[in-house]
Length: 215
Length: 215
Image (cartoon, rainbow over all chains, first blue to last red; front, top):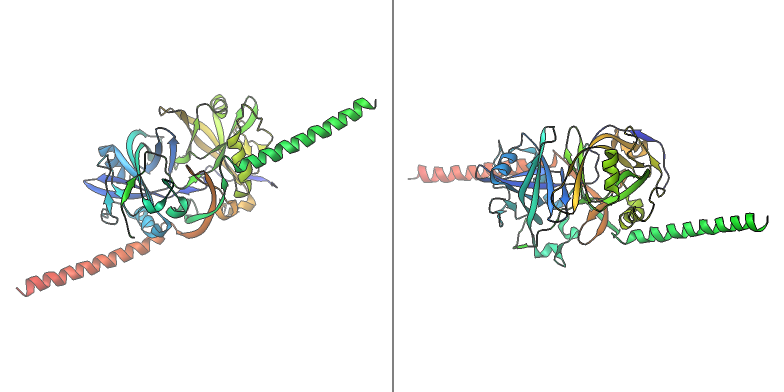
């Protein structure tokens, strides 16, 4: 891999890729959905997810009141409505009828039937990191999908067709081609690396033999 | 959007897409890099990122000792070496010479020159959520990239070519085509929705007029 000169480009959230999710909460007795890219897994087991929302958002009160929320994964075919949920606030526009809502075992975390995957979350902690947002940490108590989005009982990314978000240039992207299997493609690198090391060691041995043997 | 029957598919971390990053830390005086998909932005300003690592990992001690770490974004051309860093532990294999390392203003957060984007992070908090991992929250104090990966001073996802990870089926994916502009494509939905509402209202008015006027 060739490299060039690195340039400081500022203290910014340059994480690539970011996900595009719709966070759901029951607010004033109605479902509300907000587009969120600041979202990531924070624990394998029990499974936990962190979502960061600006403190001014309409959704936050509903999460706190009901101690639960949902993370819904929209497909690329839903990119317009997904973006719309990030443009208009629930304070001004009633977003409760945009989607078909369903509920799971927590009963108060509204989920979007149109989204291929839904994560139902129980609020376990709220963090204030000093800025204008707060972090909601949720334990995923159940996940939902239609049979047609599964392969071997697991959501299939090629069937879901989720949306990637790139911040600062504000673009949505699809998922591209498969690059390889995790915990697998790296073995090739390891073998090549070992071969290289073995070659280097052989060269060293030849050099040492040359130096020692011929003295 | 047609919908079918939702099925409970278990309490699992079904977030799509997940990023693929290499987390760097100085451990026992040497750079070490670990592949991490549990990673997300947790604050806009000051910018903060959360990375979750199993407690048994070699990297954790280095993050705590030096109070800093890095998040490096590998490109798809680095998929083999990226996967390799997740297969072998720094406890057993010295990963300090796999990449060309550089340092920034924190001086003790090793970063990977080969990665198109690097986030240099100061540790601000460590969370234990009760499982076998811990969450490191870092303030991004500086970011780095080569000029060739930028467009208008911002990293360009098409030039970076980052790697998407899908958990449970363990696959790496590239980035696909551009789907549209955020805070923009949703306006179309809003307009159509308003038109639909206006039509509905008109229909309602006609109906009301019909009901009232002809009674």
